[in-house]
Image (cartoon, rainbow, N blue to C red; front, side):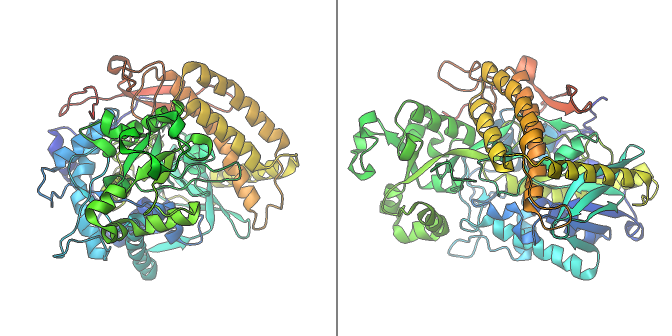
Length: 638
């Protein structure tokens, strides 16, 4: 199957406006005739469901949380980018577009990224109208701060709670549609399969997480907005419930997965403290506006109190290595630099896997109250977790898995290779290439949900002329039976190992072999071990409880089963890409000074993987990346 990206013709800056005019529309009265399923209620899902409901479509929205407000989007801290240029510092739509393309190490689709930069300005207006309490200057104008990979201030924020406030805005819009009857909400419900009829996605199979009941829901189109797969590593900054099940089950029904090896390691997280941990905690990238990252120059100083180490004995390594961007170098570069310092034996804290993030200079320059006003909730959270007061001593931070740039392959219309299946936000691959810049995830989620999908889904309805689906169709019954068999298989094993222990082992393997640094030998080891571990899972896992009841062990085991397969594809993709780019750092391919060495001649493409059947090797398809407005160059932040 050839990959059709469906990028419109014409100049880059005019493609989206031209496309909106050229695509087919659905008459307002006819929109009521179409049913849409939205899976996920974070920023992408809630904004999509609310907007589609506002347009007149009949929407069902599903989430596994007890409320849409508990979607993981709520955990985003630092801000959201938009090319408003309120600071008059040289920003523009084109600069945001270029920064995003460059930040992704020239591995993103040019047309999608330009559209993202274009609609970014509309997102802020939408959210302000909803009452999102963005930070403001003394005179009342919206405030901005800087984020990694940019030399302008374009990030809008609400202290360290930006994701929460944006989600409450989207939730208010969603609740309005629920009240008007255009959206029906299904909380505590997990999607377990996509139903395909005549080659089109026509519904989903779900499990009620309270009663255990499995049921079918039919629709004219299905929208997945289910987030990323970072929890395949076991330890990540993601909420424990985040999983890859929706996109993985869709992959098995014909939706290609693109660039699964592109995972983002965030440089600013609280270090691992022991084997007891089940997740890690993010410290916002915004802290690097005022915090300075350093380690001792000498190994023998690592056990000293940070305040006793003289200024001349400190290595502010980001400022030294990347003077143009300093502490706001992009995430992949900053993470590798922290790893390098710790690998040299200059790490701090327990286990020596940490570096300092120091606010002493900022407090001296701006005053304690200003720092507290900007980051107070983050400092409070840090103290609750570590018992240390970061106003008095430097924070200790270390990189951790945070975001995934890979995901379901989608075309310009956000439709996957399975017609009728649209994928939004972090669940798709489209906008960030091999590395996402800070404050761009919220931008993409809301762009997809508020401003892109509402246009493109109508074009699908007007063009495809599909018959109205029904959940009584034989395909729904067959899919339901497959889900029940899968569930019973998990419950029947009665082995000796918990899903958690198996997941932890998989995550540790992936972190060591396919984490911040990868190499061919390690990836081959992982590809040998993962099938063995998967076989152990299906022989030794112990899932307690019953199918027809509230059973979190069963939920978790199903997600881990998918991770056992997904992890293998991730390593396969990493092994196939013999270059370093962004978050994919192959140790064999680096410059003399340790930076990523791309191979544009051979690897300037999107790798989209097709499922060919259980125990069969997947097939890789290539979408060539072509640039008309930018030229691929060596990414430098020095």
